[in-house]
Amino acid sequence: MVRIAVLFLCFSLAVGTAAASVGSVGAASSGSAWSPYLAGGLIGLLTMATYFFSGTPLGASSAYANAGGLALRAGGVDPRRIPYFEKHPPVVDWEVMLVVGVVIGAFIAAATGGELTGRWLPPLWVERFGETPVLRVTVAAAGGVLMAFGARLAGGCTSGHGISGALQLSVASWVSLACFLIGGVITAHLLYLW
Amino acid sequence: MAPPKRLIRGLLFGIVFGFLLQKGGAAQFHLLIGALLLEDFTVIKVMMSAVVVGMIGVWSLDGRGAVSVSQKPLRYGANVFGGLLFGAGFALSAYCPGTAAAALGQGNFDALGTIVGMVAGSLLYALAAPALNAQPMLSRGPGEIGWHEVLGLRAPPTIAIFCIGLILALVGLDALPEWTG
Image 1 (cartoon, rainbow over the protein chains, first blue to last red):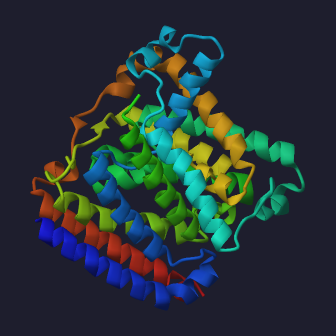
Image 2: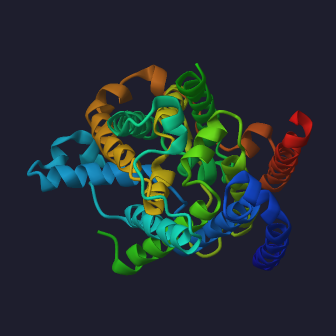
């Protein structure tokens, strides 16, 4: 089975590289630096590595829960007074480090690819809502509140359910992912097209 | 706190993850919103490609190293309601928990709003958790269950079905511009 896995690894790397060279035209028109199949395929290989070496799937949402608990502690409040944090003591764990790493990795990718943006307002937002940085950050924060609440309730986010749980064949993850998309598509249409 | 080696591995994996997310366009506001507006499918293709490769790869490693494929618990109310809430927040923010970090790394400072919101939202959930857990409507469900069990198949044929379906969907998404002009 391991040999099959390794063979598959080499095969997908080869296919991915070929797709990247052919697909680089597609990537340019789609707006991403690399072919999405290459980036996605390599993320798939990354999940193999995280499972194999760390026994942990990719995820992100729990890092923010840990950050919240740690913030409480930093503010002089013992988080364990809240039952949730008694069950899940806030700690700098693997996933917290993963999210920190994501910031760094994305910076390296953007910097080396000439895609650093350095702005508060995305152009698409300005088109619809004008130069409104306070509004943008407020809406982003409101979105964050809903996402964190929803992710804790559903048990994961687009990484935890959408990638990891989905590849594990968890029914919960496919259900959650479908609802992420339904909620997201409806809200995005209301916000941007209505 | 976890052992330092484990934390460093998490950091390194995160750097690779963030790098790939950014290269795949998942740190870009217009691509994320474009996906939710059903106009641009770049980030959808990234996710689906990751699931196809990961599904075959991870399952073939099941039992090796630290790999142990388990299932997330299916609780109808929690997964549906939580999912819809997440989706709504996703559209407002454009960045999700993972892509917010990637977006920040790329220099999109509005992701800081999302990050602060997510920390606050997690605390809100922590406070609401006891009341929510007491709601049978939210917690009812079959528990940890995978599609292969639902379909009454072994994992390999289920994986084949899902991967063929995902690849067909990817081919369809790729051909979409030609269909719609």
